[in-house]
Image (tube, rainbow, N blue to C red; front, side, top):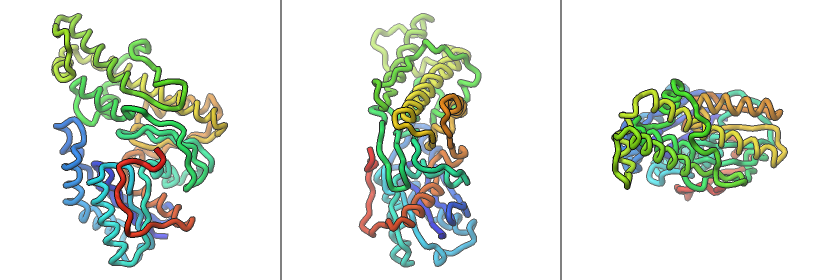
Length: 352
């Protein structure tokens, strides 16, 4: 079945065409370069970018697939969670195409679509499995029994893992987005496991990363004071960030390495704990942080040690894309699920 997927939940404008989990076209246009100076995504800029580029992205995807809209049997679009203004651009496009071409429509949850990405890579993951979605805006653990049967096991209660990467990168004055640059700098650094706490909230499967971010802030402040580079008693993050470069490249690399090690350790421990708690031996990852090389190595090692079968999408499908939206939409439609033209944007997931 030919499915057109549309994804505009944040700063990527994406359209894909799939045929029974086979990728025919995958086009993504990102506005991340417009947000760099602000250190994070500006919703208004992201929404305007979607409006400007979505027609071009749609045309490119259809051209790559070498098909016309008359061949499409289903339109799948992200309706939640995300930036409401950004979501509405994709939803409006999907509704217009559905109505004008008489094509069935289905709204898709962005988080659950991330977990479906492994199926779009020819993987043979079977249900049930534990699913970890870890990205810039979300860190959530699910028990997945089928494409339409999910149970939330735990989630972040403050910063998401990817958000923590962004904020620490900003503290170190390294730029945005934080994940790739922290990973790059960490590769040249040495890990001090005692530097930042590996505790995350409590003994439940919930996550908390704001404490680690604050620990990094205080550590940088104290190191600047030791070097007589910062003397103010009441520190402000912006002032510390501007002075962080004076610590030197070697020390910044070590901070990045130790921070990354703490974050990935928490993600690994909580995820393996979820597998044990639910007595499930299959694990699926999704979301931008699952593209982190150290995290992949750490979770792969832990999975082998605990007899867990691990499935991770290729890095390009870990990031926001419309392939996963089309894939999950098609799977749900085959179960008799579809949406009305009254669907609209929701800032939060119905599962969280």
